[in-house]
Amino acid sequence: MIITSNHRNIKEKFIELFFSATGIIALLILIGIFAFLFITGIQTFTEISLTEFLLGNEWNPAAYGEPKWGILSLVIGTLIVTFGSLVIAIPLGIASAVYLSEIARPKIREIIKPAIEMIAGIPSVVLGLIGILFLSPLVALIFGLSSGLNAFTSSIIVGIMVLPTIISISEDVLTSLPNEFREASLALGATKWQMIRMTLLPAALSGIVAAIMLGIGRAIGETMAILMVAGNSIAMPVSFFDPVRPMTANIAIEIKEVVKGSLHYEALFAIGLVLFVMTFVVNLISDVIIEKQVRGYKW
Image (cartoon, rainbow, N blue to C red; front, side, top):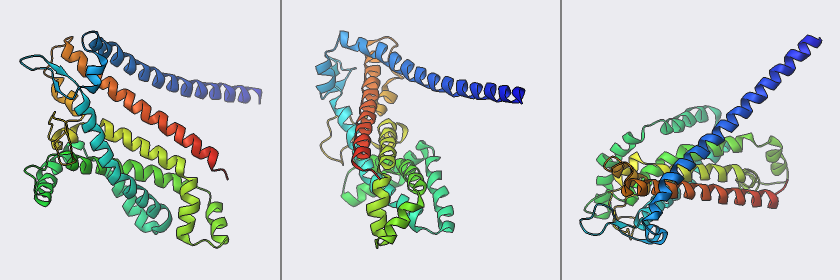
């Protein structure tokens, strides 16, 4: 019995060490990525002021005259596409999650949920092709535009890519809620819709917000599909129907053309650093919102 107990303790210690090591390695990878971006990107600001870099609305490092290093139009392009994709994905995603978890019959759920999850497995280049060949001509025809390669088309494509993340996580959160929540609500006379709206959605809010935050991260970081359908104009966009060049697309387009160690090379890493900081701020804000919701809504 003593030998069995010691064996179990050694096994549990090994498992504990394994998971601790996994967590530490993940943390070190994150710190390493940030350090690499920071060390390379921060050198940009020895020659370009931070104000010019962040607030300048003209990006043209290869200009014949004086190069321009402002990334504001790239940041606005990123935010427009991210906002547009979330306007499409959030209501559709939450509604689909509610349908799958609370309304759909089990056989229908078994068909629809894998189909939705398969969307996440479609390569972004395929969605980009669909955007170029079918969606952008349709957008141009409907809205009378000379070209359908713009922020609006990009938002639709990225919205489709974000949907599986929001639907899958939100549906899992709603399904994991205890049945006592549903039974108690219905026992008090609530209709099924009232039970979903007033009991289940508030209880699952933190998980749904987490799903949306993951969707924002996906939308901000998407590169290939945006590269193909956004139009890639570095001019400042003024509407959803203008072509844009988000930061990820700009890095992908220009990194292959620059000399390693040049100011242009370092500036592209500085753009990557800005992307990293934006993602970090989004996650920080989501944590604050979730904490407030948890404190304000207790069962």
